[in-house]
Image 1 (tube, helix red, strand yellow):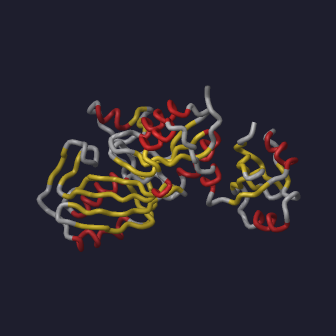
Image 2 (cartoon, one colour):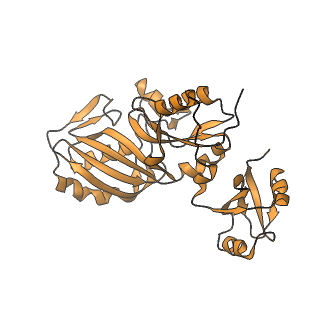
Image 3 (cartoon, helix red, strand yellow):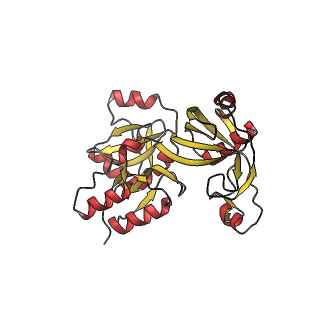
Length: 303
């Protein structure tokens, strides 16, 4: 029997386990009505993996669109076919960059940049996953895309590798970042470790190890899920009365006249079609678009 569990569970993803495997284990353990994850991590990556349960799955896009922070290591002197330590080596170099060399190229990798995704990625090419085609030895051509790098800094440096922290936007591939930095330095490079420390509103301090969580559930401990509302930190959230609750439950728009003057003032500052969260008794009940004189729901969380 499926359980009505609603909220966010933030797993510190283990090494050598895919994101979908984590979801599968939690699905078997909790039997939720719905489950999903925000922001895929490669098996070789660890760190913040937000798991949405129940109605939280409807807020996944807001977490996916949020900023992400990673700490990663680039090993210098080789390029691999997967852009990480798992792949076969394609090119090598005896050159090794100094810290000053690396510092000089950082401006070229901050701001809005063009980035070509890794050949071994989940992107689709003619309906097929790029990694599946690459594993069959087929040629894969992926177009460069624009991504946002808010900050990139060196945390430590040795002759063989550098450790960085990056804050970036949606769609950024850290493996591509390491590869392109290596090319820019003329020495090649690949990702040798990768840890996500923040994903949207969720921080590494919010995480729990998968095995620890499973053990606590088996021992009958409370789930201690994070509120669905947490995913909406960057949008306006307003409380509605019971009359509006009934209208929203039927997918009907509600007028803004029932809100207080303070709430209407906050709404008036928003551009038309902005997303607004609506709550009743502190529970998220709908996401709506602001249309000037009313709020039109496009996702409803109540039956």
